[in-house]
Length: 313
Image (tube, rainbow, N blue to C red; front, side, top):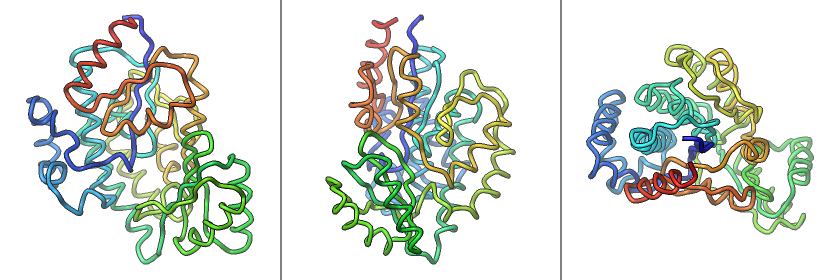
């Protein structure tokens, strides 16, 4: 098949009760992957994903849950249409899902890895009142300048997720983020709103998590990339274990260059395929690209994506 696809994988914030349930009900592959992940981690993923509970919003559970559903969606797609992507790209946590799609991480090992990543992030933030805030309607330079000025004044706030034009997420100490809200609004932000996050991702507050994550990565990463992954840290492609070992610990303390990555490689592909719940990245990409974007989140959307991609090929 000649179609050139980019595989996309969402990060935290895409989780919801019931995600992956349609796969579970209709696919033996999905049931086995959920059982294997539960055995590997000691997490009851059936309960975590399909019943009302508080754990799904806790970072150490959110991350493996999202990755597992993304990995199932990708596996089911690949079984029907085994195409090699031009590249794989994930948003934050989604970069680990991307690594499973190109063969550099076993999906079940990856579930356990991001369970650890979530624990390390929570531990790094323990005892600090941290959070994240989204700014809408301001350009990058304005947000960066405001955050720099406030850091110079002693506040701990950093721009960390460059999601889309005019949408930047800022991480830091929650009291400082609350002080930042009126400053952003005075600068004509359309909205400045605290997010429901228990960690401060992609900023220096997570420095203590980098070394133990690197140690675990060295154990589980394989030097078997069948396609490149785009780094959140550099917005450049990489294709080796050595590069991944350098970039993924840095990802914890560096901004996610998502919109820059989409812009940089959009000309290389015919379509985007997003694996996982929610279609969050489709929403971010709406203004950034005119290329078709398919979301694989349940059996019906899987069938639709297979049909539409086949037409392009």
